[in-house]
Amino acid sequence: MPKKTSPLVVSDADKAELLRWLRGGNTPQKLAFRAQIVLQLAEGRSVTDVAEANNTSRKTVHDWKARFGADGVAGLQDLPRPGRPTVMTDQIVQEVLRKTVEERPHESTHWSVRLMAKYAGLTTWQVRQIWDGANLRPHRIKTFKISNDPRFAEKVVDIVGLYMNPPDNALVLSVDEKTQIQALDRTQPGLPLRPGQIERRTHDYKRHGTASLYAALNLASGKVIAAVTDQHRAVEFMKFLRKIDRSTPAKLDLHLILDNSSTHKTAEVQEWLAQHPRFKLHFTPTSASWMNAVEGWFSQLERRSLERGVFSSVQDLKEELLRFVGVHNQHLAKPFKWTKSAETILKAVDRAKMIVT
Image 1: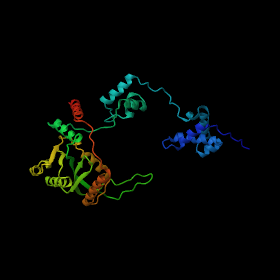
Image 2: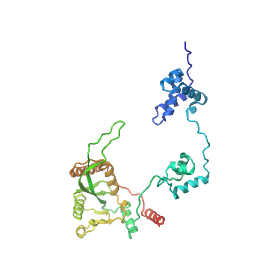
Image 3: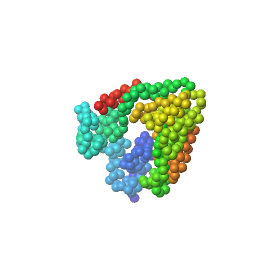
Image 4: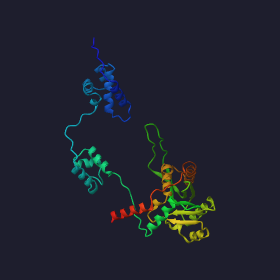
């Protein structure tokens, strides 16, 4: 008769922790494997039975049984690797920071955690600790452009004033056009999203033409007045101004914030504005489109509608643009809030200029 195996003694607290490992979606597979072995031994199953159930050797089961018996749950963790890790002195930290901001590795245009660990003789964990402490992210990059507009400060003060202290009996509208939006169709039908499979589509596409979208964001309500056109000229811009005129209360002045496109400044536009004095135009500084609030709404349009859109014709594209505007106005619109003062912006630009020069 085979000798009956006594169950491995596992406390309620340890059992709860091991079950948490098994149920946790982020638990490493090796820890879940070890927890399974211990829990099965705690049920009174033999070493041979547990080894067969987990497709492993009897020696492996004996090893984890002994480790758990000696150190409990902590004994199932990996042992420290041989060799003492480099102690991070202040000198080492400063050298890593210096290399990060002043040098480039030969193998790449920027530092990665592994490359810095290799050059500095540290572990990847130590490099992460140093970078996190200094808020350094070498893998990221942002683009910028400093405006050379001679009236930059004047325009910033004017526009920020409209955002933060809008005039009485007036509407402030952020106006811009998104031009040459392409009606793109895929060469083959896409494969839908399924459990275990992301949505897929062909990388190549067909072009069916373009359309342009004029938009005026009402800062008080967050709603958008829009028009879709085939072309982008002063004629279309004047038609859009007329639509704004019809879509807003006649008793209110209209302050329009817009960029320096030539279509906004033609003689015909100036003549029309002279006949409609309630329209007052405020131009953003050159190379400062980020000051125009409607740009943020265009980003939402791109992410939520156009990026994954499939359009078999320009008409399909136009219908989608107007549909998105309607959904936004009905469900998503909210008042726009500007938080940075003109003084803060001007100081930041001055600092950037000093760094560049």
